[in-house]
Length: 224
Ligand SMILES: [Cu+2]
Image (cartoon, rainbow, N blue to C red; front, side, top):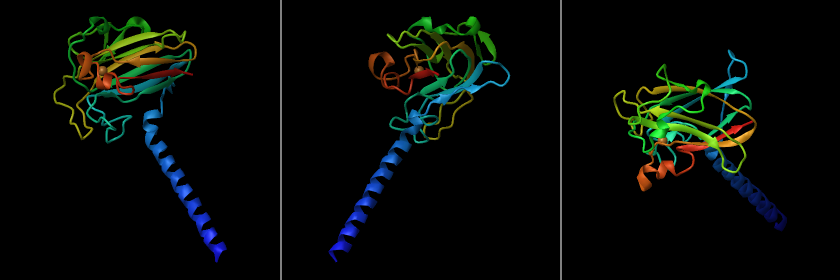
């Protein structure tokens, strides 16, 4: 009698423990879209090069935050936060830019900087700079201060004016502006990237919210 009760108690605690582990596992799995990094895919046509494709949205309903948009579905966002690329490689980047925009507060960032040839393509046209009054976002990559690793790449992503507004709640977007550029990686290290267009809303001249919260308009680039 007592023995069977203790067996039941033991069994119950094992089951409860298992349920707790399963819950913890589910919580971790639910977080993985924020943690998994986007891998650069080896380019079959060009030695020592890989391709990285991302998007920028006027909300968070597509990409890394999941179909519900996570905690801030109405915040602007890149599709990916953490990028992973090989060392000593040419990284060919394609960004589909779906968001609207406006004027830079610092016209320095209308220039294409640090790319192969000092150029980018904007909807198929080679450019060295774009209109500073029509910017959606920038992709600006630099070494983390104090890390000893140096890189500087900055590419403006013109605002998408192809008509129509992002349909918030549906994850449906207008035709994007397509921006491409290449840059070369050196030795292994972790770098950081962010956007230099004040797209964040609220505080400090539109540098709050998505601009000041990691994972929307900023992330890391890990060179492996
Ligand atoms: Cu931005």
